[in-house]
Structure formats: C-alpha cells, structure tokens
View: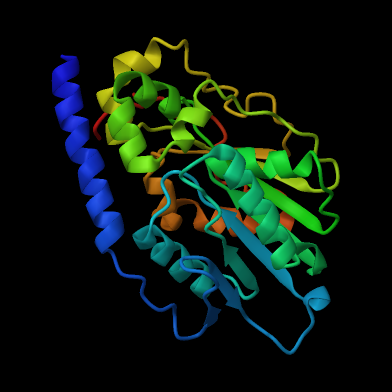
Length: 281
C-alpha cells in the first residue's frame, strides 16, 4: 500500500515542480501601479504622492502552497477589491526554516512596513508561524489587524509527508519541511490589534490520500482550531488549503471586512461544518 502511495505522490510532486517552473508571471491589473522587487516579490502601490504615514497596507504571508499561478489570483483580487498598498513577499527559503524567518525580517526592514499609517496581515499556515516568530522580537505599533489561516488537517502535513514520502516531499518543497517536522503553532498575545481566524474544514487531495496517517496523529480539533491563539472572531470555510489561495470569492470579502471592522460579517459560519472533511465533494 505504501508503494502505491509513493508512486501516486511522486507523480504529484513532479507535476507540481513542472507547473512551478513552467508557469509565467503575468502583469497585474491595469488599474494598479505595480512594482516587482526581486521576482516573484509583489508590491502594489496605489498612491506614491502620499507618504507612507498617510497610507495603509496589507501584507500577505503565503506558505508552502505558494506559487506563481496563485499569486496571480491574489493580485487580481486585491487589485480589484482594495485601494491601498499590497505586499506579497517571497520570503520562503526552501533550504531552511531559519532562513525563512531571516528573509521576513529583511522584508519588514527593507519595505519599512512600520512606517505605514496602518498595516493588516493575512497569514497562511507557514506565514502565521513566521509572523509570530517576528513579533516575539519586534513591535509593529501600526499593526491594526491580523487574520490567520488555520487548518487542523493541513498543519499535520509536514509530519505526515516527511514520514511517508520524505524524498519526494523535499524534492517538491525543499528541506524546510524537515525543519518543520514536530513544530506546532505557538500562540502570541496581540492586545494592540484585532485578531481573526479563518478555519479550513476540508482536506487537500494529498491529505485525503494520507487520511489514515493523519488521523493516527490524534483527534482533529474542529471546535478550537485556533490552538490557544487569542482572537476576536473566527469563521469556518469548507475549503482546503489549496483552495485558500484561489477561492477569494468565498472568503475574500469577509477578510477585507475584518480589516475594516475588526470582526467578520454577521452572516459568516462560526461553527464547524457537519460534513466529512475528507470527502471528495
């Protein structure tokens, strides 16, 4: 059975690499003034006349699911829906978690993020860990809000794939996965800003394939996916981790609403879905 899993996932890993290498980085929406730092970093600036102290910004910290195609989708949504500055740094270093943390430190200093009037963070799983690492050492006084993407299933992915298919996993995503084995989310107190959580309720194709191994790690905590993180509001979406990079039609507007109001809209789902998270539907 393991042999079949290895063959299946080997194909997925190789296909992923091919897609990442072959995909092209297209230009942003024509209504945006876009600057690319060191590819594929993205910076969208709305008004260069006003100083940063009179502008707001969003920083999107992607994770292991980041790729050029998904950045294109992220750019399109924020260009059409948000009238302030947007940053999507390419801070992840495939070689190590430590280098990834250092890259984010460099980004914050280079872009002078603390000089904006206010800044909002949207963090995927890896981005959540990296931001919290940064905040344990640095203050971001203009940090108005942060929304964490959390997933009881996907946060087990590094442990599962490094146990079952370590060679293929590192081929596809790098040695950083080895560093992440055994890591758990470390909550942080954020009294000076609004904190929101978007909880994924659905498994990716890969995690569906490793359902048995995922469940063997213990019960999935759906009632408290925040794992100790203090927060002001929480919403559930029946999306998997891959879809969180693409389905802004599902959670994009509530995300922006949170940045404006410090809470999600009243009509979002605040209880776990009563559906099988490993279902194909």
